[in-house]
Length: 249
Image 1 (cartoon, helix red, strand yellow):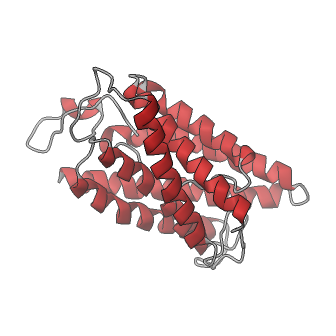
Image 2 (tube, rainbow, N blue to C red; image 1 turned 30 degrees about the horizontal axis):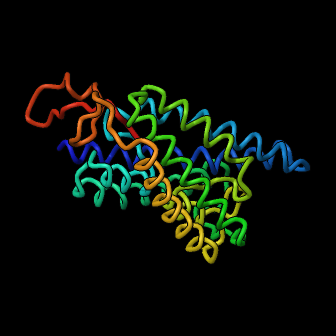
Image 3 (cartoon, helix red, strand yellow; image 1 turned 60 degrees about the vertical axis):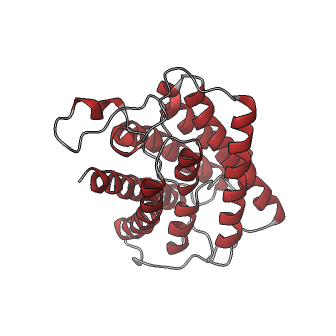
């Protein structure tokens, strides 16, 4: 039952995150049809605010990953068992697909419309490596330095900024890349471009992991090496209650 709750949290959080990204992109196109810069600003602001809220809400249930790269790094750092990560990834991907379909429906678009937005270039590939490496560094540098309380605002701020300092607008997430194939709107990505983005994201995740290991070789004393569940879980009673971890991602 505990694992089912965590998977439900990852599915729902991923769906809502994708609905925010896609829905705000559609709204931005409608509100500012002649200004691409303003569209991007509106999309970035909505995503950053929504991400802060979603991490704050779901961190105590599943760790609020919503991202296969984060889940894999969590396991690589010894903070979550492989059983959870291997279950998280399909839940996150399915959630992102569902979120894109939901956003399409909310704005009276076809429920599934394959994106025609070709994004993959050498510059975009590099940008996704940088964006994903930076995301992993933000999350796990804070965890290993005992500052995990700042993770939600830090991740939200980083992703909001990365919309503008990366040429790819910082997908930094294989699951949401898959989900965004299902919407032919501002936030979409053509299926032919998705594999390159996903490859860059996994490469960036590996780079971020290596950098955290190098820059923060020692764990903070309060970081416990066990399954990563936030403090609220410790107050639950019963056989499915889980012990807290101070570091979250």
